[in-house]
Length: 270
Ligand SMILES: Nc1ncnc2c1ncn2[C@@H]1O[C@H](COP(=O)(O)OP(=O)(O)O)[C@@H](O)[C@H]1O
Ligand SMILES: [Mg+2]
Image (cartoon, rainbow, N blue to C red; front, top):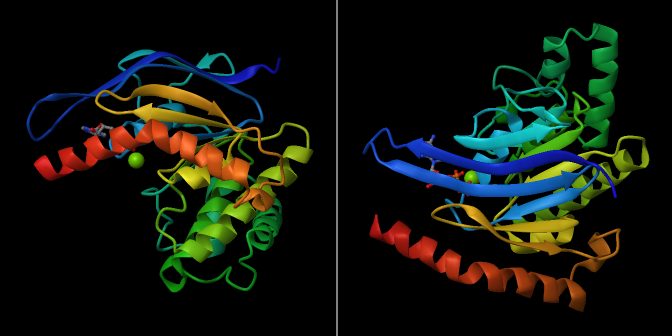
C-alpha cells in the first residue's frame, strides 16, 4: 500500500462569529488519509467546511483540536511544497502574468535565469503564450485561472490544493480547463513524485470526472458523510457521458441532495 502523504486525524475547527459572538462548528471530527499521487475531490453543500479543510492543509489556519500531518510533520504554516489555488487568493493586480508566476520562486530566492526559464515553460504549458506581459485586468476569467494555475505550479509543489478554481468561468472554458488540468497532472504524474491533488468543487460531475476518490461532506457541523471510489479508466475526458460516469454522478448526488436542500432553506431563513 502507498504511504499517505497527508493524515488528518480527529480534526475539529470552530470559529467564533465576529458579528454575533456565537461559536460555529465548521468541522467536527474529520479523519482522512490521502495517499501520495492521489487526485482527491471534496464536494458538499455551501458552508460544510470545504474551504476550512483546505485552509488547514495549506496551513493558513490551525485546527481547534486534532492534527493535520503532512509527511508525518504537524502543519503549522504555509510551505512551498503545498501549492494553493484558492478562489479568493487572487492574482497580484500590479504584476504581469510573468510577474505573478515568478513571484513564488522570487520569494524563495531562485536565480533570475532559472526563474524566467521555468515561468516561460509554465506559460506555454497553460496556454498563455503571448500574454506574459499582460496584467490580470487585461485577461479573461479563464486566462486568469490559467495564470493562477501556473503560479501554483511555479513552486513545483508536491500537493496541489485547489478551492473551486473553475467555479467562476463559463461552461465551455470550464470543460477546456478540466481537460488541461488532467493533462498537466497526468504529465507530472509520469515523472518521479507524482503530485497529489485535493480539489474542492460544488460541481459533482467535475469531482467524478477528475478524481480517484470523492469525499462527500455534510454540514452543520461539517463532517465526512461518505468517501466514494471512482474506478473510471483514464484518460478521463473520454468518460464524459459514459453510463458509468452518469451512475457515479447519480450516486454522489443521492448523498448530497438532502444536505443541499437544507443549505438552501437555511440561506433563505437567514
Ligand atoms: N473566518 C470565519 N469566521 C467565522 N465563521 C467562519 C469563518 N470561515 C468560515 N466560517 C463558517 O464555517 C462554516 C464552513 O465554512 P467554509 O469552510 O467556508 O465552507 P464551504 O467552503 O464548504 O462553503 C460556515 O458556516 C462558515 O460561515
Ligand atoms: Mg468554500
